[in-house]
Length: 176
Image (cartoon, rainbow, N blue to C red; front, side, top):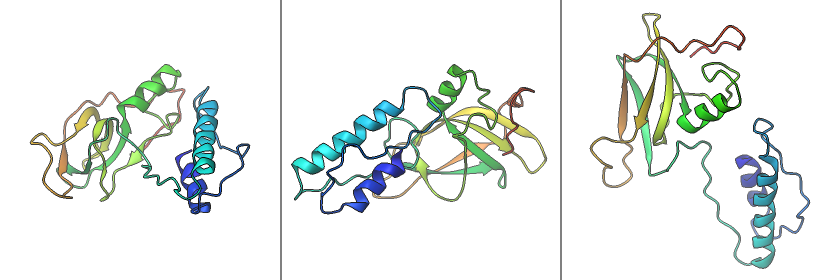
């Protein structure tokens, strides 16, 4: 849905959106979300129609870890672990929907890359070079505060956690 809003704004940089009945794609994963997406779409259209000379400037994130305050980079210690992250919120939503959050049934897991991500509270699953798989909750906010300027602090995920993060037998397995 974020991409749909971003595309809508990019397609009409002059603020010429006039169609409140435009298609708004639902995530299809969370019951009751579609009407919220339609409300967001309609609010954007109404704003653009009322302010054609001042188009909306949206700075939308592709994924969010919660109360956004900055970006961090994530690495493993020791290095070379394959790590997947899921926001604590998404984890709890999967549980509430009866999905095994440590499986591919919970679709919002993201592979850690060299790119920075929004700080926040996450669950992680790490596959270590030794073959061990561990998981834990991790607060990805800098313990010593935010650096000055645009520097993105690096947060290490240490080898540890628990090994009780395997999906149950009825779920689609997830590999880090």
